[in-house]
Length: 415
Ligand code: TRP
View 1 (tube, helix red, strand yellow):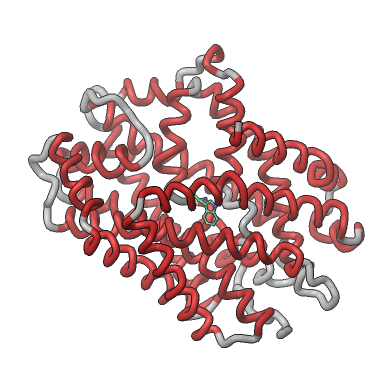
View 2 (cartoon, helix red, strand yellow):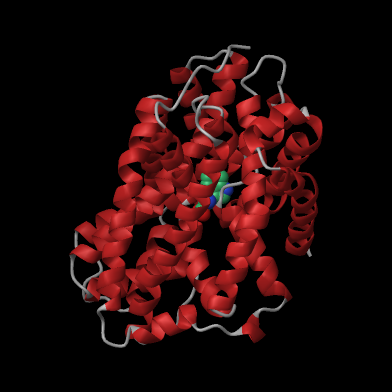
């Protein structure tokens, strides 16, 4: 096994890379809708509490495992490797299909493809794209190719540099969209939808959704955080990285809500979630607000997706390089072709796509997160772990609260 000497050359690069992994489609197409449907500010408060008390400790457990794994004699990765590598590979494959759609839509909005269209016509555009094997597969390949190009350039020169530039730009873009959206007459209803606390809507399913979402949104359980943490410099703290990542991830989700919902309500349209929101409703609404806005929006989606997909590809590449002694270039090539294969299957067969999505988020991510919590909480020597975790309270959360909560979400999601 070759020693892992790859490093992010600054704390900023490491934190931006982790934030990039966390900030993704989940923040844009799931969170705002979830907030609105589950009680506004009431949901936001519960979400933040879960982030701090459950997801952040799991983040710290996963990143501590990554840091400790660098030391001789702690080959923990060998125990978790099969689950996390399979999981990140599967997620990479279907994520690339959606990444491909965002590339497709970026090009379309450059060409002004949505101006003057109504929602019914936008639905036809989406169905047409989805139905075209050539378009679907080639856009997926372009997206996967961009991911591979960033990763092949290396940990600091590729992933670190891309994240340091693109994540701040991404924040500026959503702020711009939010400002435009809030200036529309009637946008107040969107804010009301997002904020007005309604404690009666905070039922069991809402609470389970908050927990599951905070977990998914921080990219836990598939080794992305583990791998990135293994690249942090000795002097940089995982506690701090975790705190900042959780903060940026939540801030971005809230900003995305302010960019989307005011515009949706100002247009008098019912909000939705998922692909229909991003690829049917929003292109139409943003096109009514000018030619530039849709371009900024799809560029933002593309960057958010890319900064997540590089963290997925890197899990598999890092393992091939550090445990299998493969050269980085060949490792990237090998994963590119394998993911292109499964990605094509996902692009042409919705059932394969759905199965990959279901398996990874409900099964593999949960098992991976549970393993990281148990390894850091119970298997690694306490002194070694406490050097990174520092607070006894955090250690206790990792040992007891995290495993119980992971099992609770897994059971709720599968029921
Ligand atoms: N956090 C990403 C989002 O919000 C999705 C995601 C889940 C992810 N698990 C991941 C991204 C693992 C990269 C790695 O969209």
